[in-house]
Image (cartoon, rainbow, N blue to C red; front, side, top):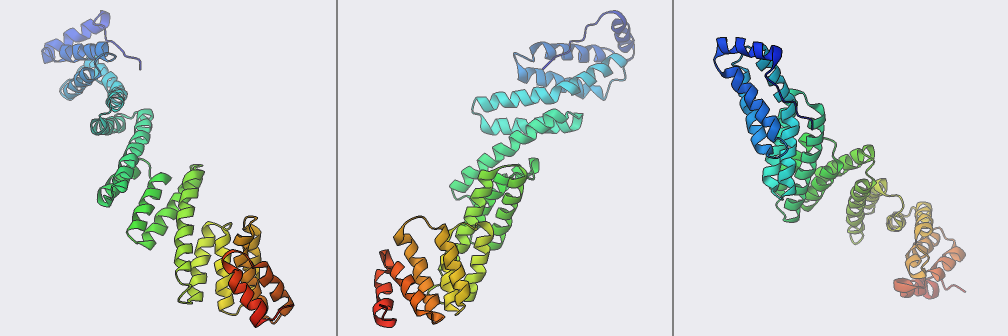
Length: 325
């Protein structure tokens, strides 16, 4: 960062002389303070900031051309210098102090119109507050987590990672509505920011949430609600074979055989090349064909289901119910 040192020579000496006549030593003090700050800025950032602040404190009391120039120079230097000091504190692992001083840098940048420093400081503060929020989240301190996460959003309202953590907090609090809103926002801004990792994480959380909820209704045979939840799960991930297995099971439960076959066929195409994993899809296909009175197709499907956990169920259908050849 370039520093400007004011030299008391030539025309400025004349202006200074005029200032002394009107304001005593005030203008001289301001100039000397600025010069000292400029000299030590690279070696004692804290002291330089203190001198610049003293200069700016004098500015409102001085009506002098030379002093006014010094005031403007101090304003142009202070935000970046304060940013550097905050960075020094961060590098020395003084996190709380660094955040407080980055806050000052942001305020100075706003007041004195330093857009570059304002942008850099906002970026750092948003990330520091996210880091603090994640620490609180891991400690299950959700109140403090939300407080600092909202501070992060003050500096970057479209920070997808912040909304992801907020969504995780709402999930732990069993607040489905707020969780969905936070995760959807994380996905929206994650796509805008080209942050596929955050988008993928949010989508997985939401897909798993609705998929697990749907699976929990199997014993109750609440098939319509299952389908509602599966529709939500599918809106976040259309490639999870388990979603289509539960679709097939639910549609069979509602005697909607063709929809069950369509879902089972889709899931079968997504499942890995493993007969035991595929068995559940073939079993639901067998149930659907049986419901449609297509015995030969049902027998074939049940035979393909004779693996893993479905061996006994498929065998019963083949030998006892359908008496397949």
